[in-house]
Structures are given as C-alpha cells and as structure tokens.
Length: 383
Image (cartoon, rainbow, N blue to C red):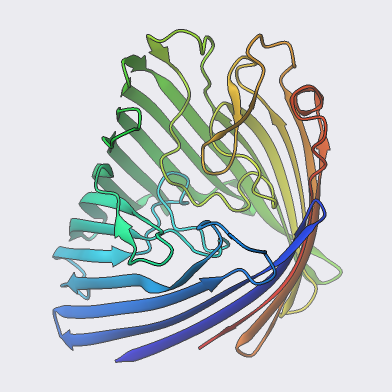
C-alpha cells in the first residue's frame, strides 16, 4: 500500500484582481494481488480571498478525484484494463488531458482496455468528463463522451515514438447543441539531427455540429535542443500551432472550427492560459535555464493570429470570448511575454512568475479595455 499527500497554495493577481488558490490531495494505492491494483484520491480545492460566489472553476470542497481499479497493470505483454474515476493524459495532452495547473484539475469517469506487445500498445477507450457540483458529489456528464482507439508504438524507428488515434466526441444533452465529431490523428516524437528533438501532431475532423457539416483540422510542430550557458544547461525550443476556424460563421450548413476536445492547455498557448487550440495560429518559443540543480529560470514568448478573421477568438476551455462578425478587426490577436522561476528543496517546490499580453489589432478593436497582466507566487508540498 502506498499513501500520497500534496498541498499547493498559489496567490494570483490578474489584471488587478487578486485572490488565493489552495488545493489538498490525499491518495492511496493498494496492490491487492499480482493482477489487481486499487487506488483512490480525495481532493479539496478552495479559493480564499476570491470573494462570495467563487465559481466551480476555482473551488470544489472535498470530493472524490479518483477511484480506480486496474487489472494486469504489471504485465509487459497481454491484456490490461482500467476503469473508474481517474486523471488521464494522452500524448502531450493536446486533446485529452487533466490540467494540473488548474486548481481543480479535470478528472474522468472511464473504461479502457488495452493489449501490450513488445513494440506496441493498442487501446480502446471511453471517457466522460466529471462535472464539478459545489455542495454535491461530482458526477460524470455521460451525455458528453469521447470514445475510440488510441495506439502507441514506442521505438517505431530510430527510437522515435508514433501514436495513432481515432476518437469520436459525442455531445447529447438537453439545452446543448448536439455534437458528433470524428477526430483522426497522429503524433510523432523523438531525437532529430545534431542532438535536437522534435514533436509533431496533426488531426483532421469530420462529423456534424447540430445540423452543420463539420470539416476541420489542426497541427503542431516543435523542435528543441539543449545547450550550455555558463556551465549550466540551457534548453531552447520553438514551435508553431494551427487550428482551423470557420470562414463563414453565419452559414448554418457548415462548421470549420476545430474541436479541441478536453485538453490540458497550460503553457501551450502562453503562461497565462488565455487562448485555446481553435481558430488560431500560434508561434511560441521557450528558454529554460537551469541555474542550479534546484533553481530554473524560464522565458517564454508567444504571438497569436486568428485563422479566420470572421470566426471567434476562443479561450483555453474552447469558449468564444470575442468576435468580429464582419472580419474588420484584423487577425493579429497579440503577443505575450512571460518569465517564471521554480526552486525545489526536499519535498517543497516554490515558484513565481509574471506575464503580460501586448494587444494586437483584433483585441484593440473587440476588447479595447483588456489589459491582461499575470503575477503569481506558489509553493507545493508533496509526499
């Protein structure tokens, strides 16, 4: 039996509004037999100083975060499965993930069956996001589900990893637009030339959103390499991302805005987590300098454009936050600069960061009062 404990406290200030976030977790994992493992986790998330009526995006008093059974998890080949409630991440969590920076961290009610071979893992899955209900026991939204297959082939070629997936996103709930989206995609990652590493991912979508025929796509590519500066490791990376938008949002028969499913978007579109993988071009660079074995300093830069000037700008959860129906506001959203540092000592981790968005033409026309700045400090204790 293994017990785990984690407590994280973070103080944030966003555009002049300040509040605290506190999250505590207590977990237990029991290997009941050679072929059976049981695990559970309780989580308590609160938002002190937020003020009355803090939403369920930042607080959820003690609830069940995980309760899972795993069969044949120790086998290196053959069948295995997991079922129950669990935090899940697939690939780089660009489509299915549990964002840990979030004070709640999404969890899933799921079932998945996999078969392991020496150079492959073949999996069938069905997952449904758990809806946070303040004052009640959290329950899954079974009318909102993702099912299909996600297959991984490590050491596919020269130590490269390739993942291939076919996922179906169904949404059938009262009061919501009916959704049936198929996502066909792949991801590759591994070593590249001159000591560098690469990662690429691409996905195409078909199906329907309400009565509209849905056709969309997205892709991502990155290249990174470790250098030495002052005798310390310096990791440099650059990447580019694209996700399609709808050229004619007023046409009820066609939809072209990429469905990002349920990703873990932290740091993928800037450290402030303002935007998501829908109707966007994003160029991003990151420099991570290890000043000591425990202290790391990071510099991040992002620039954003809309893929379609007439479609919306979407936030990290995939919701529309601004739109120019005529497309007259331009496509450049803005640029973001971030600096943040982390320090590890024994069971503690400390961190602080600052970010600022420099507005582009689109935001100046659609949200001129927006002046987003982000400042935070945090500490985490884990056992």
